[in-house]
Length: 91
Length: 135
Image 1 (tube, each protein chain N blue to C red):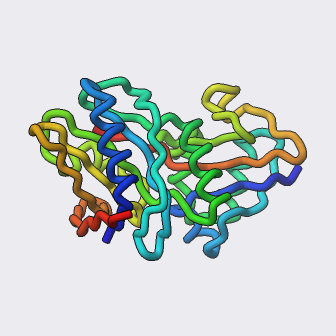
Image 2: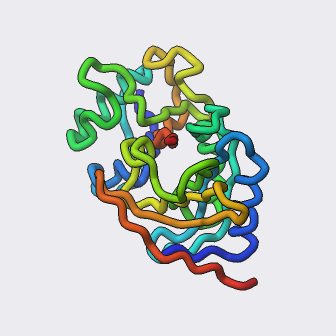
């Protein structure tokens, strides 16, 4: 299914400046893989080389952080919004 | 340049003082084109540490949506250094997510808090002027 993926400013440059795009998949992992296929400039910024979620981003299904759900196996239903935001941390 | 309304400046410094002895953090919302700050979003420091901070991801999402609903964007982050200068640490620089963001540091080392702001491009750190606007 197709879902809306909202992008943080730092990734918009790889999607023609758009703040939201459409990607396909039935899990978060599939949606993010489809996103990177469509916008290869995001490679390495959303998923790591081994295919896991990059520690510098947070991904949400509607209001929920997928790290507290089933991570990349989190199911996405019709009509949900997937949001990507930078993980903000430091020392 | 970062333009902070006086009440936002006070809110940022107050949140940092309130977080002692740990570091405190939050997000700032405003106009990415001009650096005019409209409001700040104090958040929890999930790291609960005097040396590290992590903005609560759920509070970040709420702040992002609130900013968008008001017609501006999250344009940066602030956090405190409890015992060191108001200058980005190596950890701050390594984890700076966005070269377009403003990185605001509040040092609480001395009696009077010191607030400074930076842009971070890769490993290059540039300080920028901070103007506190009277209300």
